[in-house]
Length: 215
Image (cartoon, rainbow, N blue to C red; front, side):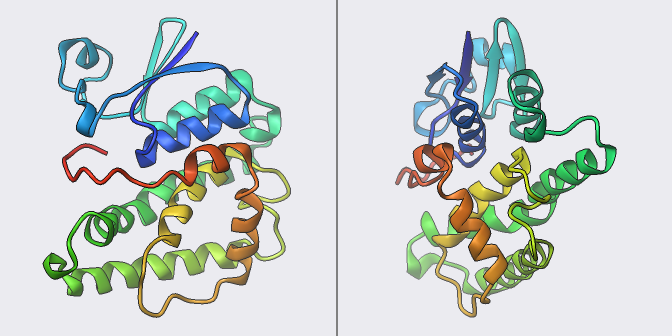
């Protein structure tokens, strides 16, 4: 039996839940993190010393880090196209975008999310918002270039890289930023992934109003 520890509206948790939904896997979810607490309890820390969510438990096997969880689920339960292993170049391409989602997008998505969603307008650091927003929009423009002539970020097949980018793209779509560029390839891709079961069920969930810690 698969269990997922984490609140369903957390950005990293959404990725795992979307992956599970698209794979049509049954699972239990245990609320943890932010307003639900539990991540600092001994039971949880025995599974994940980081005290963060999500954590996956699959028949006694414990795994944390959302992208690694998706890799595991795809290899164990998914079709070969979901996370290709035999084609080294395609395998590396999926990993490239998984890494890029965290290395390029995440550092600006998180502070912008905090500023634009969880902080009152009068308390926002708008200089920081403009700087972070400019970097984020530039990076989505890079993704738009790579999406030219493709259905999905690595080609014709939907992969877990599209999930990792998709959750952050949905979050980006809620940001009111000055000068958002027109990204035709990105928009077509976004429209395509928005029809996925996991996107409809989990990616679109709005954040909780509670402003406490833990993603």
